[in-house]
Image 1 (cartoon, rainbow, N blue to C red):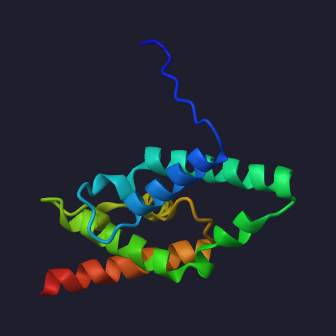
Image 2 (cartoon, one colour):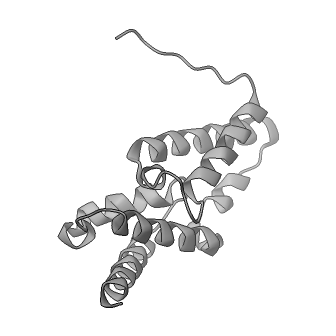
Length: 140
């Protein structure tokens, strides 16, 4: 297959692409439950925010994105990511979450939480909360 190219014309195109991905990844009731979990979407979104941060630093001398990307500053997005992880697993006919090892759950957590930067403790909290909510949903 030949190379496929996509060009973003300016900063505001990139910023709006970021906003569209943010909306798609953290929507409370996604039409496509694969979007919030996608490692490809997570990678692309991280690359976009990296470019936005680089641009702002080079042009404005600001590092506003560093603070914005810390999930501890955005508990609303943490909550939405947890909701989406639970929704993703419950949409499957055969629940996967309990069958995954810690490393797999950690990678999945990072995908759900991208483009935010997370600590190991935050990943652990994400995993514990998703596990607990899925356990509760099976009881009901």
